[in-house]
Image (tube, rainbow, N blue to C red; front, top):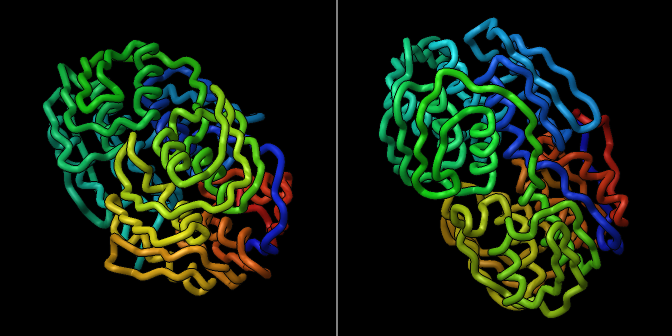
Amino acid sequence: MSKFIIQGQAKLSGEIEVKGAKNAALKIIPAAILSSEKITINNLPNIEDINRAIELVEDLGANITRSNGSLEIEISEIKKNELNPKFANKFRTSIMFAGPILARIGEVKFPSPGGCALASGAKRPIDVFLDGFKAMGAEIKIKDGFYHLKAKKLKGCEYFFTTISVTGTEALMMTAVLAKGTTILKNCAMEPEIPALADYLNKQGAKIKGAGTPTIIIEGVNEINAGEFNIMPDRLETGTFAIMAAATKSKIKITKCNPEHIEILLNIFERIGVKFEKGDDWLQMYPSDNITSYNIKTHEYPGLATDLQSPFTVLMTQADGYSLIHETIYDRRLLYVDMLMQMGADIIMCDPHRVIVNGQTPLMGRRLISPDIRAGIAMIIAALIAEGQTEIDNIYQIDRGYEDIDGRLRAIGADIKRIGSLNI
């Protein structure tokens, strides 16, 4: 198993480029199933989850061409209605393939989706997807560890999300494109990836209104075309690199990004003394001394993303004073703080959703294990701050979300080595 060896406190400087958004790429690949034509996807990140998604769509019968950050998918005929567990169990957004297959051929079988185990093997529930498909007329059966969904023709419905869900919103929006009649989705997520997906689908003949607002209305059509989709910059990479620069007191320019997508984080930076300048597609971070503590509460977009919570917690170990970190989206997502405490962080676990961080605290290198994508990148930031050497195991989790992260960090001065081959 490959791992990272990081020698802390190396001086960082230079430019780092943001790659295509993982969360947009993982939705446009299953969206390709809605059309029998060829789609061209540009600015594709080269990460593990994308590789698994490509394997999955290829297993369904798609013709794939991939080169230099571009991907062409043509699936004129879906050759099977079952998602292969060999691929589907390795990333949780495999559930996104179910709706387009169901909408196009009327039947789909899939295992419980894989992906990040946030603690003790617990995975996110898929009830929001099943309830939505059922509301559209799908018959659902569970047998031998597989969900089996059938619908002669999906029908439009009115569906209210009792819990705001990004993937749920995208999945039902995509599925409703080929359903008969009108679908009204309420209490929808508003992340930037959602209107980007809707804009693409509308250009191909779909009729979607309101994407990016709490209410989305979809008029079903018989078929849609395929065309070209340019993946937006990854807002979570942008935020992560900005926090990394602040935590390591580095002058780093973040390029090919959209600062508007992390407006809440930049607002917090202004309040706590982190120095930066921004442009339309760049963010210049400056060394910032005397960063003050700040309480955060994760929230759906445009609030502070849960995926930036763990890097921000590392930053707060270097801030002056006490910070309350309140995770509201996912259970047990704060358990990684035990590793920060092993490094010397002064953190009190109040309950599974809240911790108090007391900074400024020196960190010491330790041997760590990456439990998931975002905690894994937080471990890297902590290792860059720490005195001495840190070893991070299970870096497959980090490779799932960050393309060539060690190579990109070495280019700005980080002393980071990969032991073992790149998983991709």
